[in-house]
Image (cartoon, rainbow, N blue to C red; front, side, top):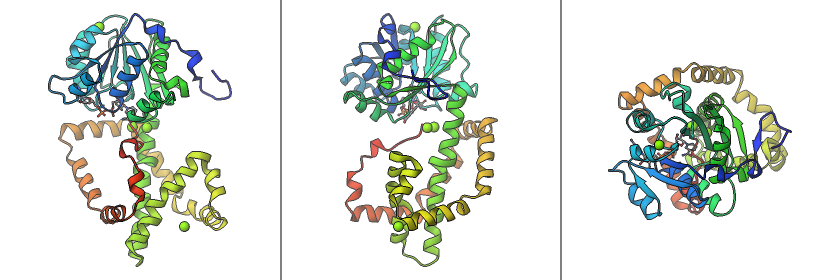
Length: 345
Ligand code: NAD
Ligand code: MG
Ligand code: MG
Ligand code: MG
Ligand code: MG
């Protein structure tokens, strides 16, 4: 553990997989995270049973990967440690039907995202440990890193510790899926959920696509060619983000021309100005007070009408057709592997 940061960061030396020697882990779901956790746990010597519906198309995949597969309810009954890796929107129903009736005193109920616990959509009994181990990466990378003897950074949070061992057990799980190889940061359910929702709404997914579309539209409306606008406002973004990923904002500023640096430093704050900051605070407040989550739950209950309309509009934006044409014409897109695209959870 290092002391230089405000948060605790755990590595392999802080965790012991043998803590889970007498446990059986039920991995519910075999999607992005589920397949990676189940396979990594299994290869780390942990007893794993995958819980999937009888009708699930993932069943054959999990069986072909050599894992024991049963129904979610039976998996929970067999297990002492339940890892909930079905989509967040179906977790409350899976909890009610398959998990809750089969939980026993002292079991661990674990999530990879804190949404349903933090917003009270799942209310586990008092005598069960409730934890979170959340790899900060899509499942395919969690799996590939493990296979390459590399780690995937992760978050760990304890919502409830009734056994007194919740922390040790969750760290053992984090080690078994390869997270402590890279480093595991201690957080809380609240911090993980609220920062995750805010980040994907304001900056990563919502903010960036809106910025790109506004830039593209500004150029095209002023008479510049759509192809040039696409390259300038969308395609080049990757090059800039790669530099930021490697060296932070300064790494990027140091790599671009002085003209780009001076222009960006003088104009950037005029584009993303104080009003954007106020909008961000409003969006954060809707996350904090539960307004966003209530809206999303109702949207799901209504069959996702608004979601459907917005996706359709996004699909029909001119920038999509331009990009498709350009990616067909040029070679760069072939290098990309879509499964590795960062998918904020
Ligand atoms: P996913 O959509 O990739 O996989 C879902 C799995 O659940 C599939 O195997 C599906 O068959 C199964 N499933 C769906 N409905 C079911 C039901 N009613 N009963 C039983 N099984 C059902 O999900 P994911 O992206 O791996 O997300 C799982 C959890 O991990 C979520 O809490 C998510 O927030 C979190 N998370 C995801 C990522 C990511 O990058 N994908 C990263 C960190 C955390
Ligand atoms: Mg059990
Ligand atoms: Mg340029
Ligand atoms: Mg995220
Ligand atoms: Mg998310």
